[in-house]
Length: 363
Image 1: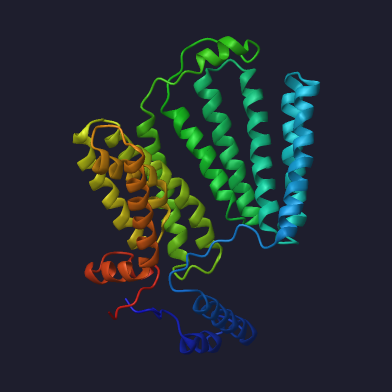
Image 2 (image 1 turned 90 degrees about the vertical axis):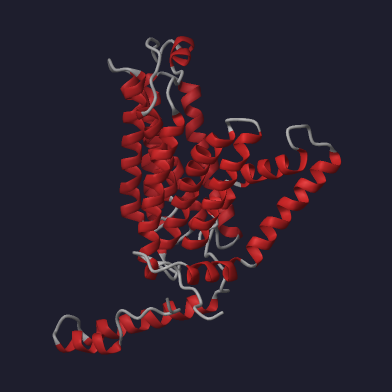
């Protein structure tokens, strides 16, 4: 594909104005926005994968203050105690976080403080939901599933209101908890008032690898949907996809490569290597490094076996392992753009290829 896939141009915009679909002022605004987007992307290095954690130390300072404030409210849980308090105070923390987000997220546009607030909001709601359902006549499977599901739904409401990309990461965490609860069976017995028996009853007896796989596929599909809304990676959709890719990569790599490597012995190395190679190719195609980052432990395990075999590695072996692993990631990161361009040129056209990040068609 070309670096700039044109689907809508100035002539189309003029035709829209003539047809009365948009006003001249709106057309001028759209043109300015298009020029701004193109300029921002052109100013980025070709290999950059835009990501913003915070803009300055002021955000760190405010985020620290918010964390201390919310932690102080949370400590009241232990000081006051009681089921009612376990419902009320976390709910107050969630409401407080929502109110503060109206200022720090919508008005100040501060990223790190907003991340603290959505985390407190979700955690508070989860504790409240969990405590409420624990008082009802239902099994721990239902309690865990409903609490996580309702919290995930509440985080989606937060995302709709504040449009914070990181909130989709929080949503994914609770969606993962709900998926685990759905695929997990629990031993009967135990109540919230009997902590010891309740803790013993919360013993998973199911294939969590399958749960991770199902969640990983869902998170990956969601991430790709957001990515394809912003293939040039300069808007909120791309930032949202970044957080979902982190969760999807970790879930998929650990459920597939981890399960293969968990078979033990040298026979597990070849299928693990093949799985990691497939993940690497997917990461290059979609231009996201999260899958390879999530698989670093298994890549290191493969290199360990290549150096030490089935025996134990000594100091010299560990030096070789770290040098090989470090060289691999350094080389891959340095020539990521060139490798991706070569791969994309070699691949035939497939659905959605023109909606992936641009690459150079020239060698």
